[in-house]
Image 1 (cartoon, one colour):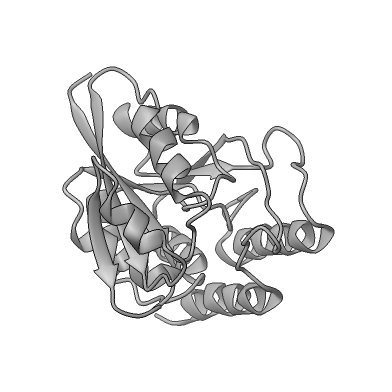
Image 2: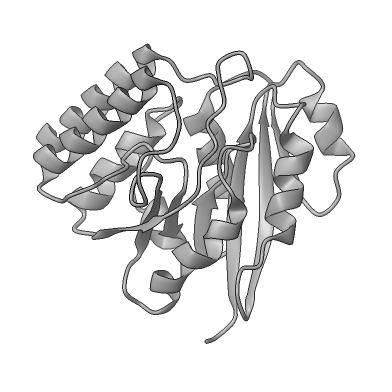
Length: 230
């Protein structure tokens, strides 16, 4: 296969406890023959020392927001700096394993898909809070119902796109509504979202998990909005 550059977009907000290890795992992941990666970290106004750690981290491109603008805004900023022909989202915590990038890249490199999601539910149900499990199931069901394409994990962090596909979406989301916006716009554009299994180790709110039930409501509304708006 021909060489490929993968742009890994890492939105980070107050992740001093995990950011260094998360980046190390990305940099050391085996991506397959001919694949290299660039790591673009967007510090989204951190106040806990994350930014200072990132300034001392080698092998990354660091972009800084002066104030906290949200995950979606950080992804849009990172996307504007991406040089790779494929992009993937990597959270700054340790819930997902970058070793799964290689599996996700295969269908894109083989021309089978332009959008690949890493599903936490294809190999069973991972351990997570019941409320989060229910919310994830409802969002996957909603996306399937609204767009007629079966998804098992709409809300997964691990979303991988050919870069031109993601840029063509004219993204507007500032917060966690990036996920349903990208899903809705990919399906509306006629792209098949291919899912592959990935591993997952959930963290708790006490450990820094930031998403709440309000974001779940916003996600459902975003799916519905982009299904109805032409």
